[in-house]
Image (cartoon, rainbow, N blue to C red; front, side, top):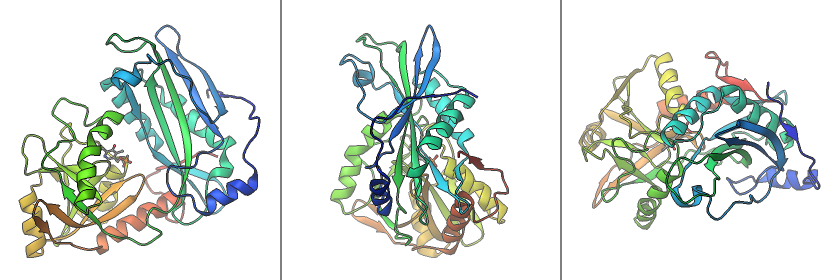
Length: 358
Ligand SMILES: *Cc1c(COP(=O)(O)O)cnc(C)c1O
């Protein structure tokens, strides 16, 4: 396995301060002491794998990521199990997806081995930052960006890969509160042939104005529609969407190239099939959603992704019209509990999804 050089840390965070952070981790504001770094150049490929103290990055103002957004990222969680060991969930899927994103953004691919080594060796030295409370985790954020100082438009010949780690609290304090969703009619998230199925910062930049609109309308998040058929649903800005029917089916929009294939999405599909639900990946219109909720054939709607795992969707606001809430249903709750149980080691990992980090 690739050995990362561990650079000495001049002043690691004292144990009392870490304990204080882990008391109330929040999300994405506190970071562990170190970061994994690997450099890439067109000539040398991936090299100089190291674990450095966490800190500001020195970047040339002409670095192409700052101008042309040649950047991708991943997101996963490391959970502390009852015996103290630390596991992450299906990292091979994240490695494969990062390479898929890399191909789309003309960034270099990385061997799964190196990707996994970066996670394992960062978490090994920063293991004290993994919280142990219910539903809490160390959020891992691998990312890759173009560092070459060059204003011409072409794929950069110098790239940096990094992993940072941030303690994350239980997103909803244990209680499942349905979110209120705004249907974006003014903006699309992705277009056919675009970057919708790559995990790249630009998609998120494009989602901020619609997200702002949603907040103004008293909603929590945005639902994006199919850019070609504006009555079919796609996904939220960073989560996939599922509908549960009263006759044992689970519906989710099919992957058309404009939807990001979530690892949580794939896992939910598997767990639903395991419990005998029939999964349909297909076009789902807003009319079908509206009609189904009104006549009782659609009983639950939820969104899923690594950060919040599974979140029930309550009201859906489409301009002046509101599709009523389905509340938090049994299927949503059961799949969520099973998935979290597997991730945290309290439910048997029958699909071999866990990967030990430390
Ligand atoms: C990351 C992401 C998801 C969820 O993917 P997971 O692997 O389940 O975390 C869904 N949609 C978008 C646009 C994303 O970027």
